[in-house]
Image 1: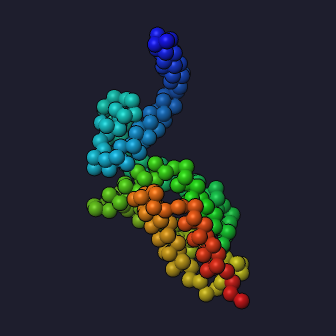
Image 2: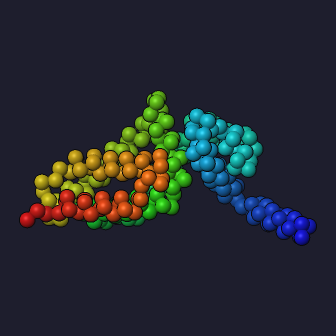
Image 3: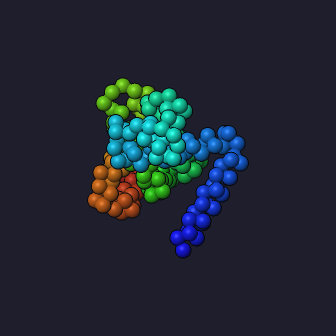
Length: 222
């Protein structure tokens, strides 16, 4: 049985190697990058960014110690690329929910998008929040881009509310800018609390209650 198991394992390894050999250089590079980013998610979640090295990332990904350094040059560049990939992933995900929507519908869709994203990408979210918070202690490209992202998120929420007011969907006494600040505070604050202790919050209940409260807040007053 042991010999049979070894034969199966060897055959699987050979098949995987054959598949890799058939890839183009660009495909192999993309695959190795993805494996290194997956490794970074695990290491950052366990050790933080300070305790994560390019050497450890390369080894955990199944490559040589020097591949990550050779590919990216420094940990700072690697982490920036990790940040940018996550940012692009989240924006595309959110866009699929909120595209062509305004007012209350856009806000509701954004809430649902966040809940679904946390469910499908919880490990990535944990690593990214660690990266975000650890970037606050010093000036960096990540911190600068994070500030720009926050501004963009507030602008999106502000636009949704303004468009809802203009269409008669949202009460005109709502302040779009202040709502945007509070909306983003709920999003980032809720995710932060959940990441600190994922058993302390029932996210389905939290998001459902918030969605109902938002609808009540934004509705036209008779």
